[in-house]
Image 1 (cartoon, rainbow, N blue to C red):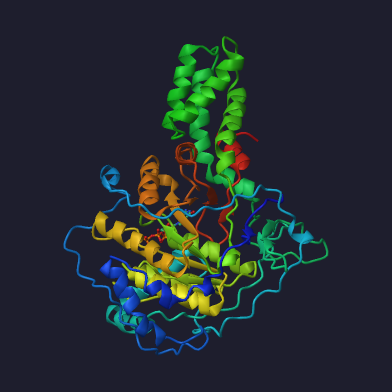
Image 2: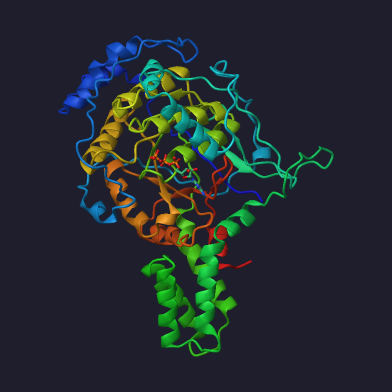
Amino acid sequence: MALGFIKKIFSFGKKEVEEVPVEETSTVPDTSPTVEQIYEDTTAQEALPDTVETVPAAAEPVESQATYSEPESVLVDLAQEPEILPEIEPVIVEQVEIEIVPAESPRAEEIPTAPLPEAIAEPAEADVAVPETVPEIEAAAQERSEAAPEALESPMGERVAEPVAAPTPKAPAADAAGQVEPVLVPVKPASSKVTVTRTVEEKPADEPLPVAPEKRLTWFERLRKGLFRSSQQLGDSIGSIFTKRKLDEDTLQDLEDVLIQADLGMETAIRITDALSATRYGKDISTEEVRTIMASEIEKVLGPVAKPLELDLSHKPHVILVVGVNGTGKTTTIGKLAAKLTAGGLNVMLAAGDTFRAAAIEQLHIWGKRTGAPVVSSKIGADAAGLAFDAWKQAKEAGSDVLIIDTAGRLQNRAELMDELAKIVRVLGKNDPEAPHTVLQTLDATTGQNALNQVEIFRNIAGVNGLVMTKLDGTARGGILVAISAKHKLPVYFIGVGEQVDDLEPFAARDFAKAIAGVA
Ligand SMILES: Nc1nc2c(ncn2[C@@H]2O[C@H](COP(=O)(O)OP(=O)(O)OP(=O)(O)O)[C@@H](O)[C@H]2O)c(=O)[nH]1
């Protein structure tokens, strides 16, 4: 199964970022004193080493201009308090136009493959065992931040804006089913157009297969397994409606209710019942026929949003700002995405912009070690926009292709969250007017309808222009992705169906529609 994956398009006639000196941008009048503070802080930033490799291990911490105070009010958990979500005032942010390229990507084997990048630097802690699974990563992060709280200020502080080098990215592993893991193939030809695609190839028969503890499922099997609860619940309900009943007003109404309860949303529910009624009204209809028509209509909704993530390397680094409510899978998705990109030969830098939670910073460092991506971090409570500014400078100096910035999903209050994200966007825009190029929001499928509100809010706050839905494994609420697609029409780049590094896949409308409708 070959799927189009990531496409990178060099835009013609665009100014290179390096043509815009930082000093010039810093003179642009800005009424925001906080942004000015960040620019005044460039004296401290200039003291930073020029390249990732030369950053001394015990570099003096860059004092953030951020004023962090202890929470005065109760933490607001957006995931738990849906009723407060619509109250957030919209903030006008610059929307980044992304060029959508149809899925006729050349197969990876048809395009020249650039060599994998050299190691950025020797691993800082090469002898430290890197956790393999997300639970291990979280446990390690938690343990480290809890075990030495006082050390957090010091070692973490010493790593202020210091990228920690990580092991060289490894080639993707082959799986037990004889397929090669998804590979990103970066190509940088002389022409201005660059394409990165992903392909799953048959493994040559003469190569020994790695020993695996259990048979590895194909991606579609994993998707079906993940969406089993969603499709089973839907199938049972449909079955109970259509047993020995003709398609009439009552059955159509019952079906509409079931579809809405399955989180598919009113619009899609009506679309499905209309499609059924147009061809089968007054006739006997089997649940299989209903499922087939349902899959077809869902695919029509999802098709337009199933887009490959495009990386515009004419403005290196391509900045991906990852936003979303706490716990929706931002850090994990960043790790998974970084693994894909580094495996494809791209130089990726990560920035631990969630300065609110110590474990999040640690968690990102661990992902950095696993994926070979240096991590720029600061101490807890530091100004996230300042960190993003530093990270962009360092990514630029290091020639990184992609900079992925983690952010906090929960702050003291809504206004702070709004201010912080808006400020990060504003500050990045000073470096590169088109940054952040991608504002990716992670959504937790298990939160159901609340995910709809979350998109509304983060679109307004941070100019979200792409989505990743996580935790589609095991939830009965996978239908929410259909409702979100119908309402927001934002590109859905990836879906997450597990905690492992390879449990992130490009979103394929047909696969998803068939899996949720329970069609083979
Ligand atoms: N089952 C499953 N779990 C996931 C998936 N993605 C992330 N998780 C888990 O969800 C939990 C939260 O993930 P994080 O990446 O820490 O979420 P976050 O948004 O960065 O959270 P904060 O740092 O608190 O803002 C972790 O236990 C992850 O392992 C997924 O696709 N499936």
